[in-house]
Length: 321
Ligand code: MEV
Image (cartoon, rainbow, N blue to C red; front, side, top):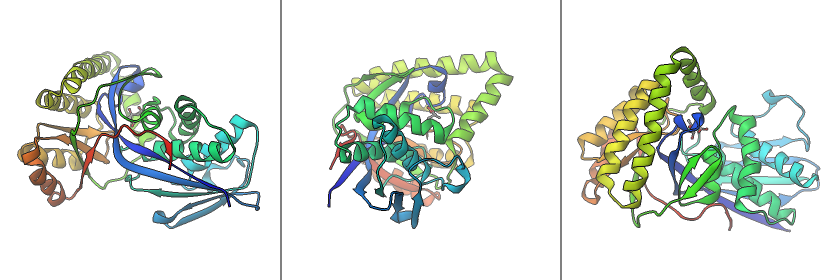
């Protein structure tokens, strides 16, 4: 029986989350953690979605009933990615979609974008179409908008493209990435919802518009400066800018004790810079360090109540396995 497996990477925003929603540039890279999506035809005229690691199996109709409540949070990005791909080709087919991901979910690493993008790739390929990365990203973005409210599009873009990008207002520029750069991720293990955090910043923005305008503007400037240091492999300077960015994210109201504890632990153990990555409110932090400090930094994350991952940037965006 015909089957297609596609995969897409995790993402890590080095600078510029939240301000990117307001049209400022952000610096983002793809990480070597991946989501795998297998698509096979079924003769039940249903979309069957299996996510083994969450012990979930859901059977859904080929057309959305309009009732969001019946769809599980983990399943939503996959289901809508399938439906949007059907829309693109003006067709429907009974499909079984199996997800296998090593990206922590709801943690700021783009897990939902990775499964959406990989789903669009697997479904379009099994339907006999080979889409460009940009087209896959666009379809996944439609599904992300249904699931997350008002996203900037940075997540679906980077996980489709891979590598490193400057992303601004729906457009991106590919970056030169230093070889062998280690990126330490610390998961606070506190799950949170991106849409809720974006909305929280929006409320504060409406209340203190002029103050927030200046903070968001400064975040955009940090990204432009950080880009130079990344491309020139000046990791200590990039780390300093990440620390400044973290101060501003705290000012926006999206940091919390769990995040600050992990950041403190990494900085005390020699990190060159550390900040939350993604929407904040929990989720993950990202830290940069010289090689000789990596082990102690990771240990400090694990002993401070988090879970450490050592990752590298991957140039592999969405692809068929
Ligand atoms: C999500 O990965 C980053 C945010 O900036 C939201 C977005 O850009 O859609 C918080």
